[in-house]
Length: 560
View 1 (cartoon, rainbow, N blue to C red):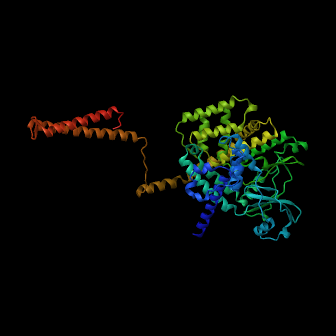
View 2: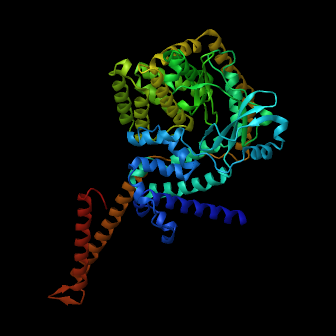
């Protein structure tokens, strides 16, 4: 009960903060048109003294400032949407992109105290020094430079205090708001806000597991063993916990710092090609890829010109079968075989609710033709992928979470390539990979291994077949075999039969009324009106009304 009360207090506090910040930056209209006013009493909504001054900023600048002031969860949300050109206007994307490297540092934060408490050590026994001024501040953590007692320069990635509680309350609010938006706004419903929040929740919770990030770094390093083009930072496991990571300090240059790279005579065109090749290898060969490759997470080491990725909190994994399907999908796009593309999409998809396959086929054909009619140097994968997402969404297909991460990551990596080389085209890197992987899939060794696995599966099936048959026969003998039989497509037949039976019943009633009324008239059964039996006249009248009603229902498209 105490935990519940604490949770509720935290939630109300975050609601209050949300309302206060929205008011501060002149977004009272959002509160007026949402469910917020139903949740929080009006006494919490007060005119902020800084509102008038903040209105001098543009609407999109104010949105970015709102996210920054609301803290880590909202900053991370802004970062995720900073690459959604398919959903948001360019000026807003430009503002959200500023969230990548502009996060406020923690105040009154003693990094030494936190490290000692988290690792249960004495600082002087393991470190020569720890810099109290952060190298960088991210939405979930802060990074400080330090030097080990052995003389190695390292960085300490330290999770922000109480961040999990704050994120938990924020996610709960986001879910409630998304539910309200999906219920009351058709425009918002089209964007599937609940699905967006669920996906965001999954990714941010994964990022908060720092020991998992350590495992990601070790796995990533293993995948690139022997590759001289890439450098993976060393991680010090004995100085890592679920809230702190100690890793090697990388004295490199961000790929976004073009002028600095060029001043050191580093070929940025070559860096773009090598960097994207390394990324495609992560996706198409390793099946384990960095899911947040924005320019702040990719460095070039000047002495060796090696590429170095950092921040392994968001990683994507692709199952071997899905990886093969993904390669096939890329191939079929090149071959323009729409029918095979649809089969492969259904194979990869989590849920398929396509109502019109002809429309899906036409939409994909139009997408492929638009790419083919664009000259190679003008093809932008970001545009193509966003169009593909639109086709998938409009045809009610749900792709797995990793694929949405992959699409976002490819858009990011193309942006990095274009910064380094304005004439960069990712398809130049993609085609050799597809050819190489195709040759690899059809070489004798691979085919032998694949067919050996199939033979083993078949052999296992044959081995267990007698037991499976005996099990079935035993259930038959014991009367425990249940067969579920379901009729489909009989609803219209059921409705038609029901209508016919109803009309038949009415026809019998009309016939009975007519015959009975005739007998009454012939017998001149009193009471009489002008020599006509009253009951007989009423019977004929009812027969006539019912008869006209049936005729009317037949002519009204069988809606009886």
